[in-house]
Length: 84
Ligand SMILES: [Zn+2]
Image (cartoon, rainbow, N blue to C red; front, side):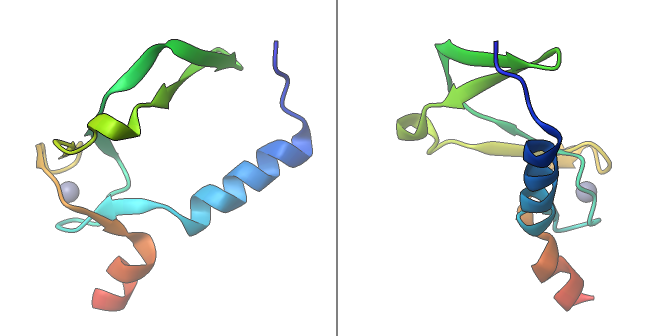
């Protein structure tokens, strides 16, 4: 079983902050993506299950904004700030 150290969690949080996508309509970061994953490639960390995405099959990606309840076009949070 993989255990995350405090430093690893901090690094992940920092990385996420730099690389976060938001809805281009409302700026919400509560967006989900429909994608293919490799069914048997997963790890469990702190009760969450993480799957490896199958990048060969992501051509028909669809994003959904949980705030707009509509299909979303995600953009980088940095870019959204600049548009305001
Ligand atoms: Zn939205």
